[in-house]
Amino acid sequence: MTDDGCVFCSIVRGRTDASVVHEDESVLAFMDLQPVNPGHLLVVPKVHAVGLEDLEPDVGAQVWKVAHRLGRAMRRSGLRCEGVNLFLADGEAAFQEVFHVHLHIFPRFAGDPFRIQADWHAHERGQLDRSAAAVRRGLAALDGPQP
Image (cartoon, rainbow, N blue to C red; front, side, top):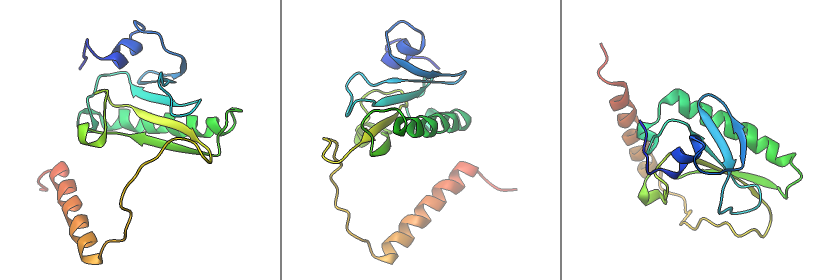
């Protein structure tokens, strides 16, 4: 699957400039043009996939494997890095802006500008159990009928 209007596909094809830090047969990693902090990277599959639903599991695993290695490299890079965030937005409601799967890797340090605001209060066990059951039903739907 490809998308000729996709900026990340254009980068993968070499039609749009990027500061590449890693490339293999299935993924490309490059500097984010609008970084949260210096060193902010994106890891993208070379094949166009709008979201996680479209991403082949083996390619997704390679995206995370490369991100893991690059996150470790970030700490050894000499860039200001007291911590690392991996961030993937899947869908507009999750703040995805470019509709080609991409995993952000950005270095973190005390006082940097990145924030995620939420209501982090604890939930009751019953609600957690109901949510867990819903996710298990989703897993069963992915696995399909069992013989």
